[in-house]
Picture 1 (cartoon, rainbow, N blue to C red):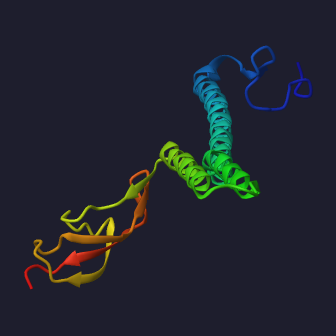
Picture 2: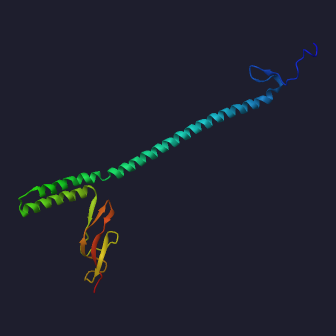
Picture 3: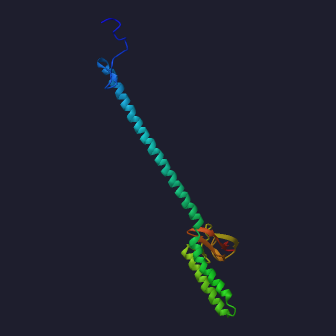
Length: 185
């Protein structure tokens, strides 16, 4: 063979089946192939984790949106039960006013019946009265003292309730207005 027929130095000969250099450089390429395989595996895992992250974020956003809608509906329709309880009370009052000729006793009986309906509506919706009795200890969380008067009762006890208060599920809606004992005067 002549020098013209010899191939120029192109580096190691590549085996087309493996795309790796042939023979003696196999040890140098195995770590490269291993690293490429590890990189491909890591990229696949990263893509899988990214997909999981995006799905989790979307689910969290959906939960947040649904919770916001539920709160909005609760605000909008939270009074619905109470309103349903008050409609019969209004009906009774209108019926009483529609009666042209009625006796004072019939009117009183109708008002008492309507008051029972209203009290029942309050009870069903956890709206409770605060009506402290005379001699009961003054509770600043549920009572509002209008005045302090000399009394035979111990100091800081209720002498008289001027106006009932109300609680909604253990939360004060309106405190009871009371007169409080200043003690022996």
